[in-house]
Length: 265
Image (cartoon, rainbow, N blue to C red; front, top):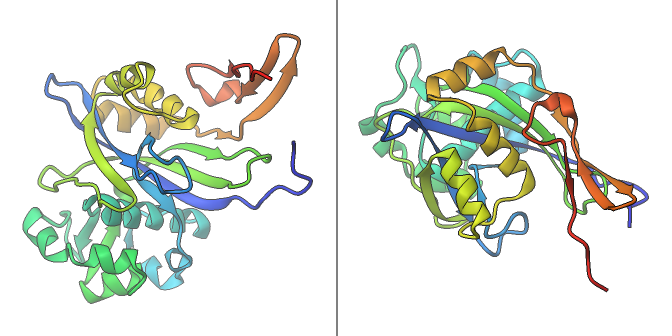
């Protein structure tokens, strides 16, 4: 039953980290959500999460490289970098004034901040000020924008970003929100979802399949930067042969509708 007043969608960010595959193709980093998490529990997903109020702190503006001019989008970029650091240990940041991202040695010394950020002991602004860092928003390529349908009890307004994983940063799941992790080729992830090895929810599957169109991480970043991101807010349609979940054709996914399974009475 459709709710009379839709729940407000919470701003969120997701990062699709990329690296070259063993055969010269493309791999992306994905995590398995903890079964007690109240959204997509047990599912194979890209790292990410809700934006914190502190991500909108205007003081961060002078600690960002290549950030979006629009304040809300800039905050979502901050959220994506913070989330991937908290959840996976990869940090897209530079020592202030440097052209290079923090290296593996410096990153090792910053690791204790992951838990403090996750626990709310300090904000992302305090972190970058204490360590004299700049967040590398210029490493992010906007890939997708999905909004949970109106009828859902929990809703997110999620922006997906691509980035190239720094070669000397080790991606590891946090053991809290995510309980396993894997570098995986997009087509392998699709196959593992189809055969039941992993649960993959509809938005994740659509974005994995779109990622599978690219031969290399560099191609994914370059081509995606040229594309217009079309907002996707799925809707349901009742038809003679059943219910269909629909998304805009112009969003460029492999499908624009999917028949929902019949529910037995």
